[in-house]
Length: 347
Image (cartoon, rainbow, N blue to C red; front, side):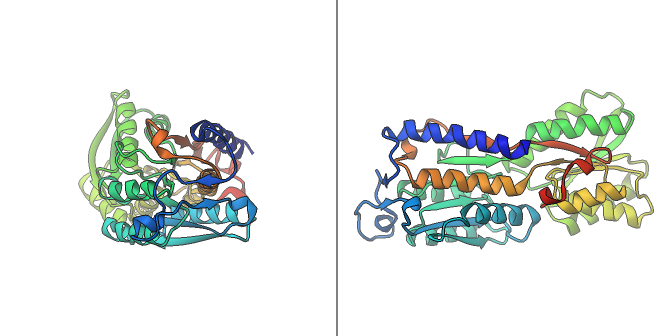
């Protein structure tokens, strides 16, 4: 499938970068920094790990909120990728939307000597010192979608498109609305790079349509129930509202449910961004107008591939001048195209 081929191609490029970074491209990794044990106050002996030779490998997946569809999709993708090796163990942790909790989990994982960490940052600034500590301990950190602060260089970031997702949603929404009408935005958590970029891409693009006006924007913190409340407020304040762009699908689904309750099903052009299966079903039923789909299983799998490449190499993050990024393929999904997303690709 095209989506998976792109992900694999990007991972192959990453592999070449790692070989150049390591200098030798051998399959046994020897940490250039102090080991995780040294970071925890233990031995400073260097550690050799080869996951493909049967050495025990532990990978931690630390989510902002592990119960959401995105995080479940990434989790399953990581586990699928590692399932072929009995010596590779994946432990998943949910931070319950708390950056403080994530910092503590990161500290625990570093002290326990995990070989790699896959992280969705609840707060990029708050998590930056933990990411740096892990990398200095020889533990590669691969962030997923929500990155740490941009000046904290680390092993890799795997992400869905952000600015361009907002741009694509805006253009298609405008087309569906006949390039006229009032719209509102349901925001995520302000200050997160991905969500800010999604909104910026949407705003910059919708500005090209002079007869479309953004009348309001409120945060629902990625939550469906909160988005229902926000949408009810929009409906009361703007009875002629024609469109809503939600920064993620969960919030778009909440907006759609509120529209249903107000007997406005199908009357408001509601868009999300993620492509989770519940949103696809709402597009099929006419409750939502569209979303930007990314295969979260492939995204998690790609993060795991990169982690395994790094664990089995002489990779050292200090050779990097910027955090490498792998951008997953976005697909614009509407009622006309939703059937192209096969059941086996609906996470």
